[in-house]
Figure (cartoon, rainbow over the protein chains, first blue to last red):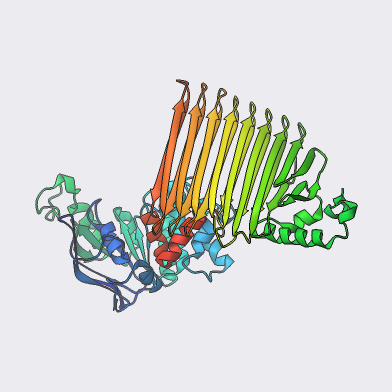
Length: 252
Length: 330
């Protein structure tokens, strides 16, 4: 259950790449145990924010701070952030030729017991017997890799899991599985920053924010965010100048 | 069924020199990844060679093994009878315990029509400082036969080995030759492999090489697949990691010489430190109904793979090692 302790505090983060501002004074807080949905259309900067929080190459803030568990983590490499309890499930998970799924799942928590390993795969609706020894290579479908990525994050028991579009690349019927998994993570004590462009995913969140053109433009209840997202967000290509965040009622 | 001890010449049975060499070689065999207990059992076909001495040759029904010493090695002939389907691999153990010397193996492997067999070869030179191992093999896979040939090397920690391994492979119609060469533990020294396969109609040749080079190791891999028969298929797959000042050169050739031939070359090399990797693919197509492709990825580890593992808490060096070990099946 969420409490009021701020776990992640993104304080005015700006990133400029090749002369283009991809994140603009982003302010975002995630509290311990919270499911926080981050909504935004494609290209709005959601994944860039995830990479900046995780510390990925090329996403170091030009301004602002990222504080996790009370510590400014901007100068920490990825693995040290992970050891503080922060992790990320990529939207397009990597392939690992020759690395068995079972070995991959325990990387984040080597002391994991066998039944926990099995539970992680069950949590993403994969049969352990059929997957534990398979390599994470091109013999797996995109949907399978996605589920394994989510299972790896689930198995880590992180303090904060950033899930980048966990609902993309998985068939519609599995949306319920993803929602169930996010709830299980929260019940196990993890906070979840749930990045999505599907407003129905936000329904399971405690709070939600909307990102547009590299900025957080709204933080509120999931209901507020879903309504605003449906009524006011536009694909960037269709909007010019400063009107990326359309005035209320301007959707047409 | 006879055991290795029973196969020893009477004069050797109580020879402590033989016993010491045999035990030393089995320890080396284990270092290369081989299962010494299987060899000791005498229940599987096996050939055990130390330098130019044949320490053991076990035949089983359907598999004939002949081996004769040469001044600097051994000449061996293994014949699998037509139609034989072996449940257990034929074990081949080649090695040298001394730090210096030469071992030359002239091998002739014949798999009869319709037979199915696996050869499991381990070559170990654990103490090598100035040692040369030369393998010249002729491999004949009969029509409809299947040979899985797996060869693992261990060259010790010093890098004092030169290995020249050449194999000329002929795959008959509908036959399959599936091979894997690996040298992923210890130092490489200097390695030259040169495998070429001629594949008949509807036949398959699948060649894989896995090598991990370090220090000033020097690696040269030649793989050629000539798809000569209608519908022949071939894959030349190379996975090499080099670090420190190691140097690898990979030369792969695929020829599509007949209608319906399908060939692919797949080379991935990871480079760390001051190491150097090269790949030179050659594609030759002589039929307008053949198709040959090539892909190569050479350079540092994939950034996304690295960051994903680091996001699970692995430091960069451990993450790189994990990626390399996965790629090399270590």
